[in-house]
Image 1 (cartoon, rainbow, N blue to C red):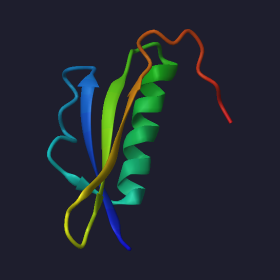
Image 2 (image 1 turned 180 degrees about the vertical axis):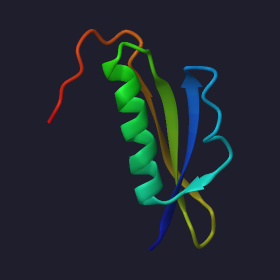
Image 3 (image 1 turned 90 degrees about the vertical axis):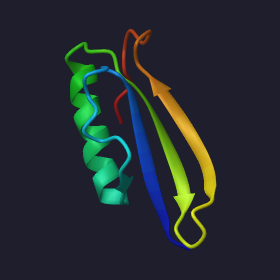
Length: 76
């Protein structure tokens, strides 16, 4: 089964270059790395990632992440 991802960046509001795009797993990794850099500089980030099945474009789930109220980010 193949999947694609859609991302909606809510904060920072001026970040809209990723809107309405189907992202591969590697592209999603690049976007999350970019947002992680913003967070590490103290810029609040909130975004939603939707996971879809390629064959019938069915939404499997979505996840919203928000660092606005996070004082410390755990790193692995």
